[in-house]
Length: 160
Length: 165
Image (cartoon, rainbow over all chains, first blue to last red; front, top):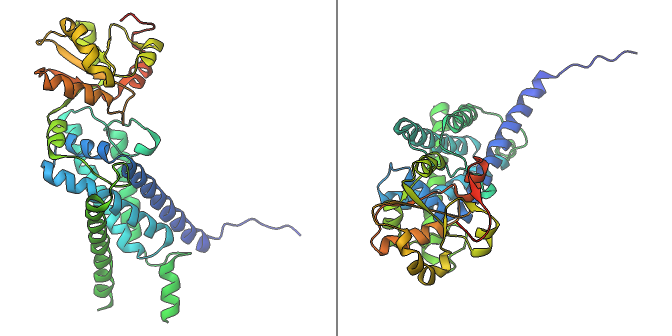
């Protein structure tokens, strides 16, 4: 008997959301880990972006990696997924604005995005596109209700 | 309304994330004793002021100064690394031997000329240390080439091997 291979779209959709969720989560955890390892590099990067006053730049540099780490872990585990996605979206908006301003200024500088790999990424349109892609994906997750293999789903099932 | 309640909970979670990150960030900054501990920002205000005042330069701009002969390059890595390869014409002033080496090279660093320090690239603070030492001596035209030696090599720009600049 001949078997036809069909894609089960009803199943593919939640799996795609799961992949998106975990990938963004991992990206943020990795980015946060690199920043936590090199706090001095992070603060000089934030100051070099030349957007926040020094006092505020220091606070931003202290808080940002932890916000990235917490949001990333929550996204991976699917706990408070929509809230974590909104948190990531807001961070991405701040990155995109900062990068766009410096591209407009014509400044050549380090992005400081993934210090863990020793990547010397320069602020430029490639990073702007990448962050915009992640922003669209994160906003999509904010409006998503059902998350496969998530703590949210488990808790919801338990409360019914 | 259900929808409103759902969005309220989303906003609450987001705010809780930022509040937790703020508390953890401030606590780590205040409590953890090791300079290298995760998230530790043991940076005195004076250093922050210096970093913000410190000028950085890209490989492209540095190379433009190189071709116009308007800058002196300083290699702040150790002597062995300098001898393995350095920017052609760069002077070796290892970060930890500044006080011994600088007096010999002082004449090579005229106050009016741009001075560009470099080391192992992003994350390497040796070039910043040497730049700070020079700024303490009154040099104002000091730049840190943050992409450092790896950036110069990647761009296929002129290098030299051995003891001589």
